[in-house]
Amino acid sequence: MLQKIEGLKSRWRNLYYRSLGVKLKGYVWMRQIEIPRNFSDIEIEAAVALDRGVVLLSSGDRTAYSKIQIGGYTYINRNTFVDASLLITIGCHCAIGPNCYITDHDHGTNLDLPPLAQPLIAKPTHIGDRVWLGANVTVLKGVTIGADAVIGAGSVVTKDIPERVIAVGTPAKVLRYRDALTEPEQRVKSLQQ
Image (cartoon, rainbow, N blue to C red; front, side):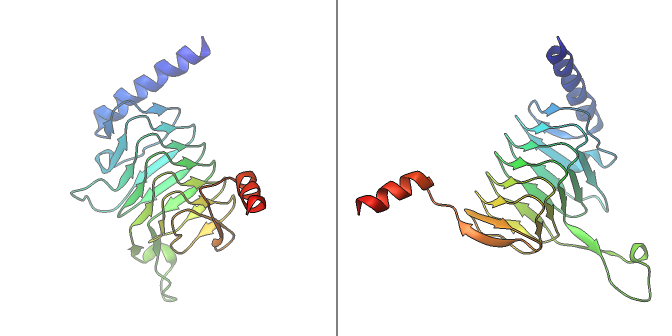
């Protein structure tokens, strides 16, 4: 019964956000999320799941394109904040852990002005297909994370991360490349050689 009620609430949220101008390209599973303004700046493909407490915030001047673009079959876990003023793209089949922060901007560092009195400095942020961000990951402006990358929990991504790697730390650094073979298969193969 509870699952049916959650399903009905999700469908209602789809209708509500679509009526406000969010570009939903099919059904999106939505728990209690927040989209505070600039609804038409957000585009979400079908089969995306947005868990409780997810915030999709678009600020700044209107553009001809959607500032937040989320690819199909992506899951964004609880209390994740996506904060765009220029462009954030999240690929298909991504797994975004709880309490992540993804942004495409920050403020200037002029000592003569307080931070909030300075203009935003924005650069597009891109997350490729099939990327997994662990819990509490921060992705900063201008970063590209390549397809099939894994970012370890608690990492802060300040520079581009290549495809098919595992990266961890503050700042995130490549730990190793992901291989097509699983570790047990690699051990067996190496023993056979």
